[in-house]
Length: 67
Image 1 (cartoon, rainbow, N blue to C red):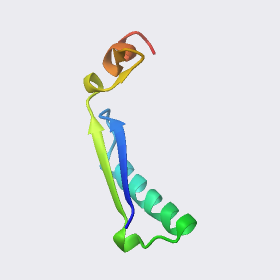
Image 2 (image 1 turned 180 degrees about the vertical axis):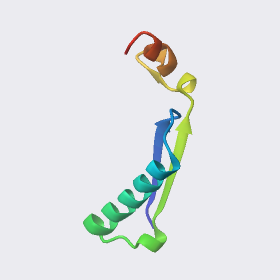
Image 3 (image 1 turned 90 degrees about the vertical axis):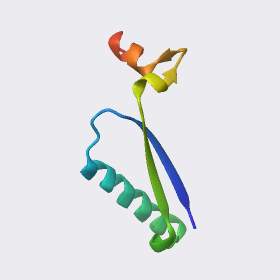
């Protein structure tokens, strides 16, 4: 029973895009590892850019600095 947790920043990802990610990951696990899609869980967590840090700065600050 695979459980995959995808964490992305909350920046305009559409429901259709998230659906495609879920379907794609499920297919990958089926095709490559033989996992049953009916028991494969994919969870997408969207994190505010203020709550995601890289190199000592939040993503919000880094984006404002052009990085």
